[in-house]
Structure formats: C-alpha cells, structure tokens
Length: 171
Image (cartoon, rainbow, N blue to C red):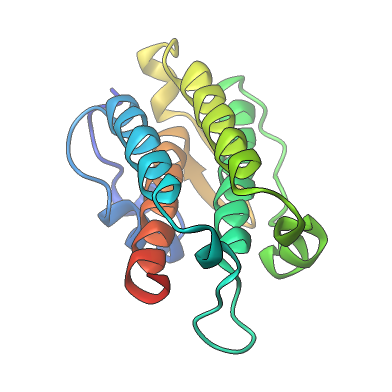
C-alpha cells in the first residue's frame, strides 16, 4: 500500500536521507501538500534572491529549483517504467551536467513555479490511480534496485531536502 514507508532494501542507501524527511501518511497526500507549500514558499522569495548563491560555485536559487523539477521528472519516469512492468535497467543522471544546460538563470521565477506545479501534478496523476500491488514493484535504476514506493518517497524527500537548504542557506 502507498501508506507504508519503504524499507531500507527498497532503495540505494544514498536515498535513505531523502526518504527519512518525508512525514508519515499517504505519500500521495504528502506530495499534494508539499506541492502547495513549496509553491507558496518559493513564491514568497524576493525577486533578487532567485539569482543568489550562498557561496562561489554553488547553484543559484533558480538552479536549485530547476534541479528539483529535473529530479522529479527523472524519478517519476522511473516510477512509470516500474509501474508498467518494464524491467529494463535505467541509467543514472548527472545533475552537475543538467544544471549548466538548463538555462535556469535566464527564466522567470513565475515560469519555474508554473513548471514545478505542472510536473508535480503530473507525478500525482501517475501515482494516484495505481493499483495497490504496483507500489511493491521494483526495477533497477542507476545500478541499484528500487521500488515504486521508494521512488514516490524519494520524489517528496528530494524536494523537501532542497527546499530546506534554500530556507537555511539562501534566505
């Protein structure tokens, strides 16, 4: 069931910190609540903060936010493949290459907020109608076994992780 938290064997240990950030309850409801709170939090940022870097070489807020969107897209794609029974192993992705090619800093905050909202709604549209048995399905991504349930928690936890970093280091 989607209400059960993933066990440690359902994902690469790298993701356990993200999963731990996710509050208890229905993961679909958590994703919906965080959609609203993340949009609200980032909407409240002053315009000049979107291009702020807390240290040389670190990403701007725009880059962090687009990284959250890119990560969700990749994790949701993996969830789709697993949900549909595709056992083909999936490659990893290198966020360090995505960010410079994203042109995030040339985009408006409004366009980034809209994209996040659309991507999260798409993730919810994928997850909400799943049969309960789908949540236990597993696949291989980035050379590690992962369950669909863990991917849903990773999506939520990844966004919560980066939102907390922005609150802590960028505000």
